[in-house]
Length: 623
Image (cartoon, rainbow, N blue to C red; front, side):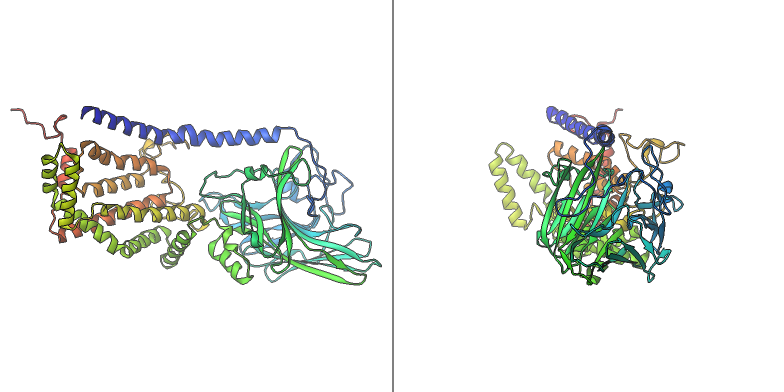
């Protein structure tokens, strides 16, 4: 028995060391290593690929295209010495401003790119005065990120590119105020681009071309999203970040930045990627945890979609592009194509609304619901519905948890009734163990006969836990991926349900005037401690296992879970604590109804009462 106890304490100690050491030795160094690798990649010297056209006919525009050539009217030359600030890059060229209830920014008339977009309703921190989230940035900055539309073709004369300066008929793009861009190539082709935007995050781009020349031409419409440099990612397996698209019959396609780099060569030694031919319907783009940019071709016209990773000097350029079929334009004829761009926050109702409004194939998959979408999506809908009634996602979590308890009440009741019956026959079970302590086979047979006689299901107690696992995972997924949970407050010190409890035992929950380091080994706030207490009380509602080692493990389990959940989203910890509390109340009522004594206080007294180390019985009082 002594060896068993020693092994048990060693196991618990090792478990705690693993839990505490994970953040200190793995989580922190992992991010630091990722930053170092990104810095090394930027510093590595690679053969630059000259600007050109990929095999599918979609151009690979570069902020460095054209170099410091003679400036076009109204623009400034590219400054030497590398990237410039965002403000300096925006001031280099004429622009049309973007003003909507959700977005601010501008369209670059040099190139006709949508390369300046900020999200008005979202900030970098919970402080409403902190900077707005910047989605798109223009060429010439440290990390360009933009969308581009246009035409490609051969033997069609000069076509608009990144150096083309368009003429606009207005100064501001706003809902119900579209802007028309015009450019004449001087060779008989006149290009027009009508850009419209709604009050949220959807741009509609109608590109038309009129052939006033004497010869017929063949053009291909294209759209793309281009991102320069590998962004910082969360790196969690439950969340996809990188290239994403739903490409017709090819279905959902997802490439992380690292996975795309492992694809085969695509258009040259410095480019890797994958193409999808003859696609109809869907979208393709680049997604972050909460934001995304995706081009949406005409849903009834076939196109070729591609995801590429191109090395431009020392920078990786990630691109999602779509190229439509050939448009044969006879002399005197004209043609037009309409494409769309989503650039904004991945709000669930907005995404679903666009899918329905524009009949987009599985546009809802822009949000990573995961393999268990049939659980996570209903979970979000329930939380969102309650939130709209009470205006607090924390309250919504409490009410939805109560609703789930009521939904699974029959199963839980059978489980707790079985547990109550097992507690009632505890003396008989102890007698059987003593009677057949040297014959395990007969002991098990006698136990099964007792279970059958009293109609007890010995595994019924597992059902509440098994039911809670998918609910726990679904809530974790919803809290982690949905932007609605980002910066959603509860009460008191919980100002972001998607972030861990900000209090820490290290500074005595804010009483000491310092902030603990981000990757300190122990992150333990008030709510994780409350959760641990409720879990401990729930376990003490049940009779202690007859095996002393197993009983000790059950005693220490709440401590292990408290530390393990310390770094989880606060909303998840609040759910767990509330669920434990409801379970205690439910089990108390059922045990009383079945005439079984609730020995909660007795079990708590036994736990904290000093006992004999060898027998486990209370030590004798010295006279």
